[in-house]
Every structure is written in C-alpha cells, then in structure tokens.
Amino acid sequence: MTMSLALSHPTQGRRAAPPSALRALAVTLLGTLALLIQTTTLDARGAPESFADLAEKFSPAVVNITTTTVVEVSTDSRPIVPEGSPFQDFFEDFMDRNGQGQGQGQQQQRPRKSQALGSGFVISEDGFIVTNNHVIEGADEIEVEFFEGFTLPATLVGTDPKTDIAVLKVESDDPLKFVSFGDSDVARVGEWVMAMGNPLGQGFSVSAGIISQRGRALSGIYDDFIQTDAAINRGNSGGPLFNMDGEVIGVNTAILSPNGGSIGIGFSMASNVVSKVVDQLREFGETRRGWLGVRIQNVSEDVAEAMGLEAATGALITDVPEGPSKEAGLESGDVIVSFDNKDIADPDALVRTVGDTEVGKAVRVTVFRDGKTKTLMVTLGRREDAENASMPTNDDDETVPEEPKSVALMGLTLQPLSDDLREQLGVAAGTDGLAVVDVDESTEAFEKGMRAGDVITEAGQEKVTSVADLEARVEAARDAGRNTVLLLVRRAGEPRFVALGVN
Image 1 (cartoon, rainbow, N blue to C red):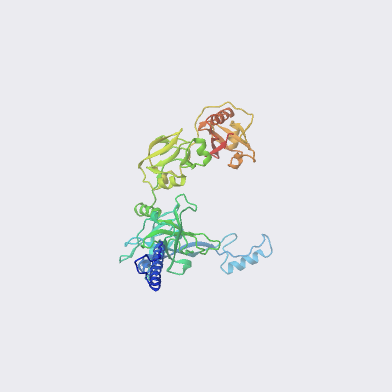
Image 2 (cartoon, one colour; image 1 turned 135 degrees about the vertical axis):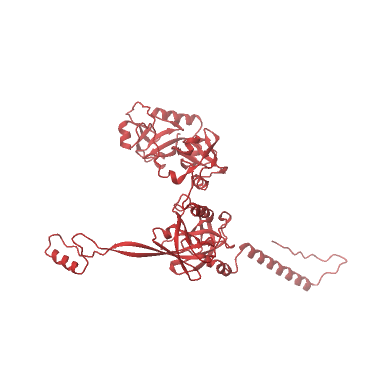
C-alpha cells in the first residue's frame, strides 16, 4: 500500500496554507500510513496471541499411553567351564546349591516386564482412542492416563502397520471429552499448528510451530506426512497435531534427528489418511483397501519419449498377474493416466488413490496404449486378500531355436535364453527373451541399472525371442524419429521398463 502527498505552489488569487499546517498534515498522514502497514503485516502473518485457550480446551482429549510387555530373560549365569575341566564338578555343585542350576545344559527362565510410553487422543465420547501402531505393538497390557489424572485399561480394536495407526477402546462410566479430525488437504505450508503428547515420558506437554512442508513420504506406500517444526520428541508418537481451529490434522509419528531429540523436523501422518484407516478399524477391526492387481513403475523422461507420451506422468504397468486388471484387459506397457476420474501423476499417487477406494467398486481406468488413450472398467479386489498371492509366470510353451552366439548391442552383451541359461538365471521354463551376459560399465545401459543376469522379454512393447527381434525394434524406433527404445527387463522375476538410446 502506497500513499503520496503532493505539495503544490499556491495559485494566483488563492491564499497558501501556512507551512506549519502543511507539516502537521504530513505527519498525521504518515502516522496513519504506518499504522495501516503494521495492521496489514500482522493480519498476513496470522500469528496467534496465545495457544493457551486451545491447549486448555483440548488437553482433556489427549492421553498418555503406557504399555507393558512380558519378556523371557535367561537367569543362567553359570560360568563357562571347559568340558572335562577339574573345576567342572565344583562349579556345577556350587550353582545347584544356590538354586541357579537345573542340570547340565539347562537354563532357568524368569519373566520380566518391559514398559514403553507414547501418546494418543480420544475421538469419541464412548472411548475410542487413536495412537501409533508402534506405540502398542506386541503389548500385553495397555493403560491410558487422562489429563484429569485417572487411568483406564485399554483393549486393542485394530492396527494398520502400513500407516502406523492403531485404534484402542476404553470403558468409562462417564462420557469422555474428544476431538475431531479436520481436513488435512486444505492445510497450507506456513500455517500455525500445535502438537500435544507425552514427550520423553514427562507427561502432558504442548509445543507449537508451523507446517514446514506437505506431502512428505518416509518409507511406506501410503505415506502422506505433514512436516512441522513444532517440537516432537520420543513419547510424542501417537499424539495429535492441531490446527488453529482445534481440529486434528495429523498424528505425530516420527522425527528426523541424529541424536533422538527434536531438531525442528517432525512428521505427522495426515488426517485424511488416518481418518479412513480409523473408520475401517472401528467397523471391521482391519483395513480393507482396494486392489487393482498390477505391478507399476515410474514414467521417466526417456521412457515417455520412447512411448510417445507428451509428459512424464502416470504409472507404467510392468506386469499384470491374475486379478481385476487382467480380467478388465489392462496390459503390460499400458500407462495409467487416470483412475476413477482422478489424474494420476506417479505410481505413489495411484497406490494411494486405489487404496482409498472401496473394495468391489467398478472404476474407470484410462490408459495410454499404442499412441492413444483407452478407458477400461475395473472392479477392484481387496489388497489384503491378494498380498500373499504368488505372481504367475509365463506359461507359453512355444519353443524358440537356440542361438548360442552372443551379440553386443547398446552396451549389452546378449544371448537368447536357452534351457541352461533359464536354469542358471532362475527363469521359468518356457520364458522367451534375451539374457544379458555382460554390461559395458561405460555405457548408458550400466548407468540405468542394467546388469548381467537381467532378461529382456520385450522391446518397443513387442516380445523379443532373438537378437534379430531386438535389432528390428531398435531400427523401428529410429525410423519413427525416437531417440530411445523401451525394454521390458526382468530380474529375479521382477519386471521393470528401461529406456535406452538408439542413436
């Protein structure tokens, strides 16, 4: 906001204002301007005057969690004496007299209780509590301490290790104070947040800061972490991260630290992920995620160029085992660009979107295939039912004449698969392709991860059974004006696409 004050010379026939009056007017206007600028700056920062009201209102819904685990510990402390030593009988008699021996080679076991601390928060007046799975994992007893000072035993309703979320239940004669989930998707970087919990076992504690980044992924396939500089330490795990409206927008889960203490980088699992998991755990005692039934990889710039895609987006299908996608007609080499009318930026986005979709729903899946898009209807299965299913192998019984001679191409030394090579590489009988027997370390192929033992089964999204097939695909890519050819490579049965230059 700017303001100018123009002082003009007096015109003929008009009396000029006294200099003192003009100076007074200028001072007044400049003072008003400074006040307006200060007010605007404060409004833009949105800094709260205090977190006290928020802390006082919602502390009763935050709980400390203590878990007890019974572990077996050996109490056999007999000294090690060489077999046949003249001291062997002496030491065994001494230990037996003191109740520490139970015969040669036996150990006395005595259970010991181990305790761990964490945090959580109440989400309903009838006693449902959210915390982290790692807080209660393996616990034999779970005790919940409330802000008012009373404690209640808790039972485990369900857990989801993939998002590190667990739901507990306590029984109370009186309704419990609780908090609600907010919409984490509208949370913005730079907004104020408040963390509550049981840091370092010190009891109920509050810290405040801002959201320093969104959409962080650590190690899980469903990760969507809010990063915050609000102090989060050991013991805060499972506690809530509040926005300034008192809504829970995250569950404090992890810290990034070289020494185990807060350095201003903490991570809270976003509430829009947590709330879906919690709803399923409360209803079913387990998660029920949608399952598309494909193996996928990222679309790199060179892969996009090799396929004729305008942009390096989407999820590239590397394999389609028996399941929903195969039944619907999806194929290896398809690029999923849209799922259930939602654009797919990368494989992680597809995994999260599919996982959030209800089991049994028929969804539209749009793929890029052979230079154009195609939409298919897929009825989703359940991921949990399919996770332990084995991936099928190629059952094609067609035989290919063996070509024992190796050929060098694009930095790769290649040889068609023979029965001996299939056995050496652990490739399923009947699988056709080219075995990589060596890789020139100075070439692009080595830089992109190609190694001896890899098997090329497709080039340019067509099967290859001989070196001549691969050479034809390379020449076809050149004729089409492309700089790369797309290879489907399998290593220990796991497929991935690699784009190699052809010029």
